[in-house]
Amino acid sequence: MKVPILMYHNIARVPPGVEVYRSLYVSPAAFARQMSLLRTLGYRGVSMSDAMPYLRGEQQGKVAVITLDDGYVDNLDSAVSTLHRHGFTATCYVVSGRMGQYNMWDADKLGVRKPLMTAEQLRSWHGAGMEVGAHTRTHVRLSQCDDAQQRDEIAGCKAELEDRLGIPVTQFCYPYGDYDDRAVGVAREAGYAAATTTHRGRAATGAATDLWRLPRIQVARHHLLPQVAAKVLTGYEDKRS
Ligand SMILES: [Zn+2]
Image 1 (tube, rainbow, N blue to C red):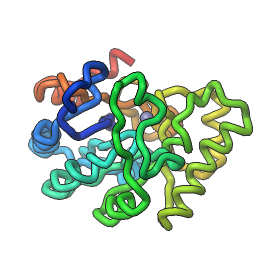
Image 2 (cartoon, protein in one colour):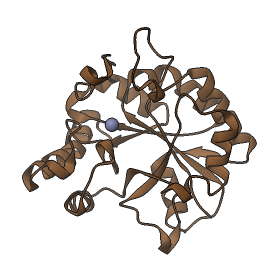
Image 3 (cartoon, helix red, strand yellow):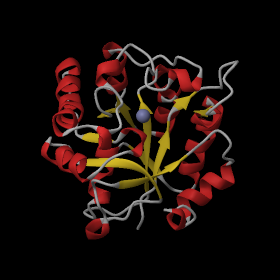
Image 4 (tube, rainbow, N blue to C red):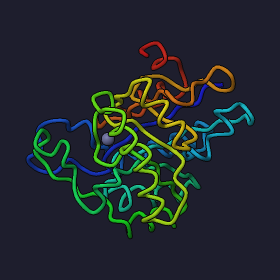
């Protein structure tokens, strides 16, 4: 059985004046409809850590992983109540050196500064039963980093989050979906359990899966419910990977 790993960024309406990359926004109402859809289809929405037994092939069942990239405040404000309503969990991948700041890595390109959760807000997220994952210290393109920088960004992010938040951090996500074999090696050595990419498709399970290059399914603003259903249920995305 394949496991869909859904990828979100902002759970918010598009702010006025934002003209590019509007696809990154899924409104709170659309997110709520999508979570209801998963439930209706018989899926349980889970965090990456909760999905590990399924990905490893140790457990069978219909799970869909909910991931949110970058650690935006809107995830806490607008996703948690919906997730709770269905008994779902989710993983938010956090940029440890930018907590309480904003998306400095693409704010100019996007034309908008999006607030990122503070350490206190991340503790609230975790306290609500959600997972904090790692997304490097400064949202770099890892393939362009030298070995020392890669270690600092990948292992340093885990250390910084665990130190600041006082919780274990065992999941990693490559920023921009950009990685190379060195980055995979560093992520393994750093003690993560798995890492997600932006390759398209549903994740294989058991011996067939590569836990260090997990594919995901982007859910964007323009996706309608039938498309989301097709992406989750069928090989629609797998063929595009
Ligand atoms: Zn990111």
